[in-house]
Image (cartoon, rainbow, N blue to C red):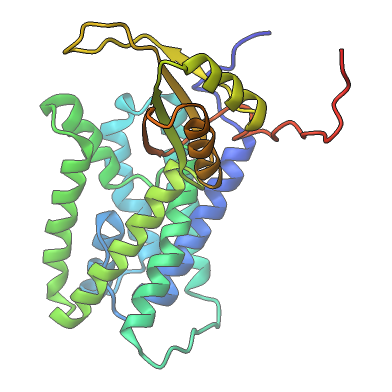
Amino acid sequence: MAEKNPESVHVLDLIMIAVGCTIFAFSLVFFNIANNLADGGLSGVTLIVKAVFKIDPAYTTLLLNIPLIWFGYRYLGRQALIYTIYGTVVLSIALWIWQRVPLSINIDHDLFLASVGAGICGGIGQGIVYRFGGTTGGTDIIAKMFERFKGVPMGQTLLWLDVIILTISLVYVDLRHMAYTLLYSYIATRLINSSIDGAYEARGNLIISNNYREIADLIMEKLDRGVTVLNGQGVYSGEQRPTLYVVVTPNELHELKELVSSVDPHAFMTSFSVNEAAGEGFTYSRPRKHLLKKKK
């Protein structure tokens, strides 16, 4: 079977990027703009331009991205370039449409509710876009170029660009609105990270025990999870210490501890978060366990 080309364009990605951009645009129009909340990134720049020059963000989103995409196209890759252009166009169209829809969300001008709504709605929208490999252009392209030429991590560049844009936003928002903007940004960032990292946190586990074989067999039998034996060595004793590695869902963690303890109460076990786990039992359905197994 031929391997999939990582630079190919997928219809599902395009559909979900469009959905994410539409949700994000809805959030900008009915929460940020309606309640005078600022934003970071290029969206924040479009809101500044709207406040100062009364220019529709639907137009500035597209216009400001054109030179950025032109300068950064060679560093994006084929798929990223197509997805960025597509996401930018869809976001601009969605902004234009939502601003002309006769709809208002009545929250009695409560800035707390507005910031929470913007964070949830905007975070979900952007999270969907990023989850399916898309972007809406803007500061992401600048960050990629800084990483390429200056070796500056993208996260650091994006952070400083957001600080600069939010600071400039004080030309049209007061400190009270800015405080609620920061709350919105925090909620949105958390949701975006959750969307990128996965819908849940799996739990990775390292288990050190002299009875590792018996523990591994029990895990495979009772939890139906794969187990890997890693070759470890005690630094002080210099002895070889086989280490088991197994990934389980959070609700299986207690059962795993019970299984390990039943075999070796003195076993050393450490558990840590795994943001994404792909494979049988995680992205696919786990095999059903039957009460009556047919004997061979």
